Image (cartoon, helix red, strand yellow):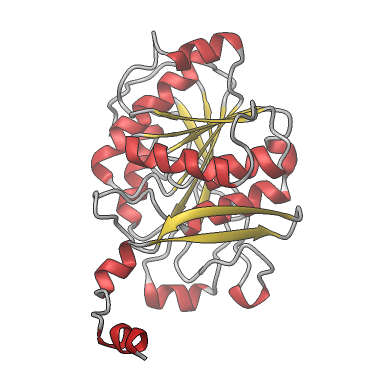
Length: 289
């Protein structure tokens, strides 16, 4: 009785404190009968100021796309930028048959947490996946990443919800350009939840030209245009030609499944989610915006 009284009289943690607590979450990818278990935070932004300790819907959408098109990464070397919880890298190593996956983030604390998630999925010590710090805008040359490109070069670069901050877009574009310099035939897939059209367009402009050439069939909206128009400004599709950074940016046609029809992973689709495919066409201005 005294134990129960003690429990009932104890103070409950605040909502903010609960949001900072971590929990184990398992994401099932029904297309490939594989799951990824992560230790992540419920909070949008952690107490340390990073957004990398939880899984975002753009990562789940890109993961679903890769699970539906395994040939994109199967047998290849994959580099993930702004990996956060590492769900894409773990999925690639665990269920998509990659040769090697390197998960990177600019925050050392996030990378430490990422290594724990690698362990949770039985991949610790596996050659198929590693985690490392990579800060955008800093030269890759003379680092271990350049050695990777020499010894066992990357074929695919992935990123999810890494374009939300307009101030870091030039650094991201600079890093992409340097990666293409090291590996001209690299392919990049970036997934983004379009919360702010201007922010994503800043990324598109930094890669190449603005939306001056459009393909109506290149991108399908996840909900009806009438419903979307009531919530957001219409996001038009694009197929850009090489601009100042000489990168081609093309929308990938992969429509989010309405949540009532999802079989896993489960994620909200009310806000448009966009996947773009980026390839290189030549020389660059690394700080084009």
